[in-house]
Amino acid sequence: MTKKIVYIGLAVILLLPLVVFGQLTGPGGRGIDISNQSMVVIILTNIFDFLFYIISFLAALFLIYAAYVYLTAAGDAEKVTTAKNIILYAIIAIVIALIAWSLPKLIESILT
Image (tube, rainbow, N blue to C red; front, side, top):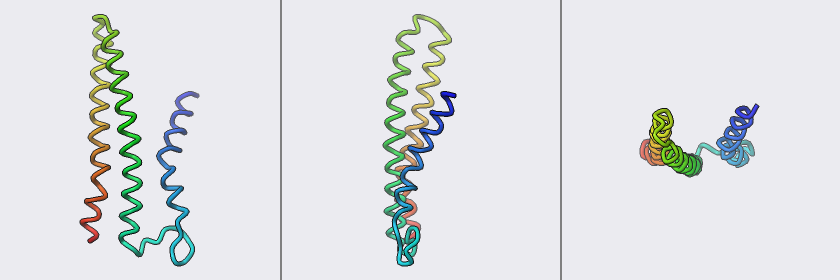
């Protein structure tokens, strides 16, 4: 039950920019005006910036939690391994966040 609530919460947080940007109207009065390339770039930049900040914040929290687990392991090999895995996954999340943050610039260079 708790996992379902967490997954639903993450889905709402990550899909929120799509809902907000879906309210923008184009010339026809429906949806996002994608005929203007700069509008697409602005929307993608905003979405990926939002994701970057969320993922970076969560990765920082997991790094702090991993440090806590590592410091309280008291020689328990299983807890040390768990802490190392959390650190590894947090670093992977930071790399993914950096890729998401730089992706709009790549898309902009392709579109222009």
